[in-house]
Amino acid sequence: MWRRRNQVEDSSRHDAEAAATGLLRHLQCGGDLASITVADADLPLADGELAVADVACETARFYGTEVVYPRTRAGYYESHPAFGRRWVPNPRLDARRHREAEAAAEPRWRDHAPARVVLTSTGLRLKPFNAGAWLPFDHALLTEVTVGPEVQLCYSVCAPLRLAGPPAAWLGIAIEHLRRTAE
Image (cartoon, rainbow, N blue to C red; front, side, top):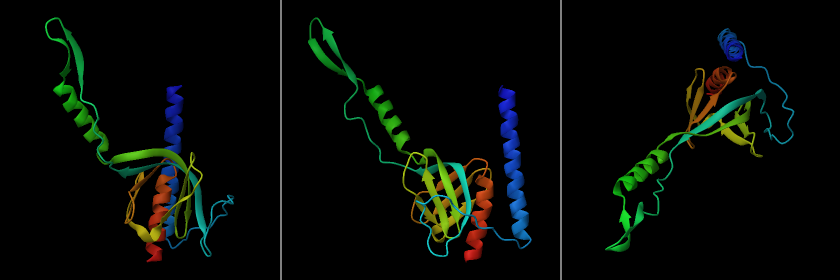
């Protein structure tokens, strides 16, 4: 069973790479992206905005959070025959809890979620499957695109976005093309 799953994953990865290189060759030879019709009525497209792709991808955001230290000190109550019941602090456990809180707040990829991604002529529209609203990411605010098996998009006003999955490489090449032609 595992061998079959790996063969399917390898096949889809190979197909995705072939589609991405085919798109790259097409665009390098002077071709353009074809527009598609998006069948979702709740996706508002502006006048003149054309949809180019409508796919499902894994998404994540890269950011850090504020450190939230534990409010209580670590320790235990000890019942001693001579001293009675008293609180005994545990500074080693306190230090470990503080280190864990600081590590949890460091910048890293968070909010991993599958999402529907619609690439348009003006930006990327993202709708996580567990949310009801579309999130806009305009090409005008894009500062950096890193294309590979996963695509990392850096924006000037928000945390970086990562797209993963079979259509990610194709989307990265298309985004880079739209960004270059808009300038």
